[in-house]
Image (cartoon, each protein chain N blue to C red):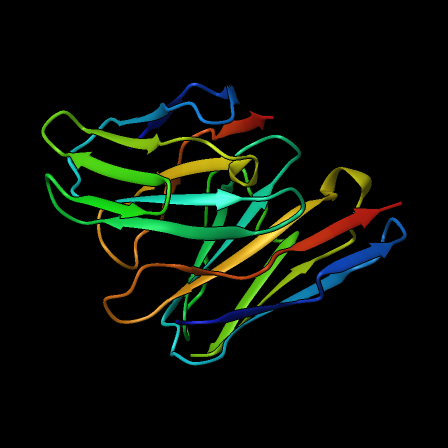
Length: 114
Length: 111
């Protein structure tokens, strides 16, 4: 089946640091990628949708200047959390979808800001 | 706005028993997904239901979709401990559109 690789799986860093998370589709072209955030014991909340070569569309309440999304190729999207603070600590999950496919999810990145 | 409601939110079951998780959604769609999530892990796709009346089974899990009632069920037969996890349903309007998730059902199967 289609595989999405997400890296890193875990990040622990100091407050004020910027953190980049990569999401790669390994065996299909992901025309659309999605970024989700999940707090403990809660559901997944969509942060933004990105189409290759276009600016990401952010959900209401998500700061686009804080969560920078780049989808420069059909196999790679990145999420950069800029000047991260403890409240940004969460589990971030990406997914990718190609032509006439359901979403395929990455393994997630656990971000801990000290 | 599409909304997805799951119930129950928490389910404690005895091994060997049967139970059903319900997923209701608010707008017309004939596409519904079920996922499993283990602690600290991402989502594992269980079922993709793409038409009214769709029924799919895998092992002790069976999912069905009634688009007229806007309802999907995930039925667990003769539960075993390995089924303990959080189960999510999700709905989209078409491939490439965003998924809207239910709140999730935490399932605990007791020996």
